[in-house]
Image: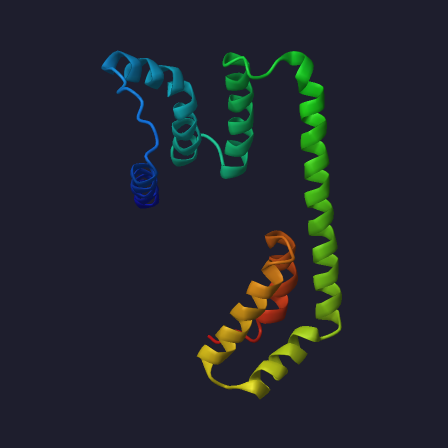
Length: 170
């Protein structure tokens, strides 16, 4: 909420400085109608979190419920029709396949690196540089920052966790 408030503050300041035009204020009736139109979408959070907290379904099942609920909402808001579903499902399957390929490749690479004792070698290298916990954490953070500019987060976590975990200070 703090981020949202600060973003509104920055947007307001920039708008005032640049002299952007101001729209007329919405009436209470328009606000209520907008809220009622958005209420089914806002209910998604309650359905998902309420279902998890109440023990109706697990977090994984909640994601499936959320997808189903969003499909119903998309049809309700006329954003989606039944003729668009096959292409939608094909795009979802393609994206899922790409992510699964990345995860499988990352796990394979991680296993090979562990089999070749690379994490132990990196631990020895880091400890040879310094025994100071702060210096080691700084080196790990800089390495992950560099890797994060070129690699997606999921493969990076799967590859570098077994490498840096043994060398992380406890």
